[in-house]
Image: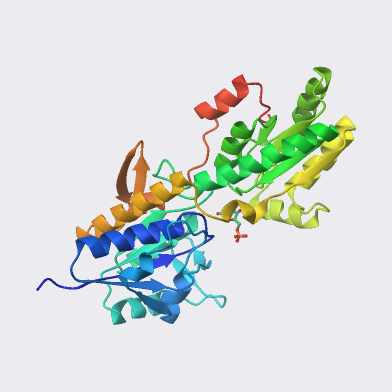
Length: 361
Ligand code: F6P
């Protein structure tokens, strides 16, 4: 009789669309391809692994969840010291408790679905002697080593739809709208949604913006008879005069500001410079909610099935990835080594410039 394979599934960090599709892809493929398989689902991300809070997942657990948003397992964020440890609020290491659950359940591998932070903490778990396979999920699309993450396209669809709707009211009233989209560090979502919705300016963290060039674009549109303008602004966009500040200085500046987010400051500055009536719209976590779009259902399923194949072949320590149109995998240490920022010479940025979209510089 073939030996039993035991794995545990974990969804960690901020949720996104497609997590349940990925869970389903892993579970269905493992049950389909292996005779002896036990799958556990850890509740609320790493917390379940730390507290031994889990559920046994039968074949039935993977039915009827393809189209559901969020994650049926729940998720959470944990603190980690980069390259060193995963810790609780008192600074104590959580890795021994994780290892305890792992050993007690006799696990062969953890399958961890997460964003940038999760790839880094998964690498720490691997270094502590547990087998790990990861899947790249995030609406930010900023995980190194994969062309796309699941969750990204669904968020682009929602953000595009928000700007489409804003267009009609902006045009009726002749107003400037600043639409703030998610993305603290990387501008993939804002760039893609901005281009797809016909935004007039696109401001991303990778290109510090000068408010005067945004104002000049608005004035130019006014002269051309266009009475409204739409600025797609990433939550992590930085004004040029703050570009050189350290992380600590930026944090203090933000805390001292009368504006709750970058978009409110930008809107106030644009009103002062142009005299135009200006509004801010922030869809926020709405961008991460609801069912995955078909493209994310497909991508998450493909990633899930690839993760199952890695388990079957005992190829641990890898993150599944999309390269071109091919699903593959890369060493986890590579995926965890850096963030995939949007290159400032990316063809889409050049295309946006060619179209006359203001990139803020
Ligand atoms: O990483 C995904 C993301 O949605 C970012 O775009 C955003 O900055 C952040 O998570 C929000 O985090 P939280 O869910 O903790 O508010």
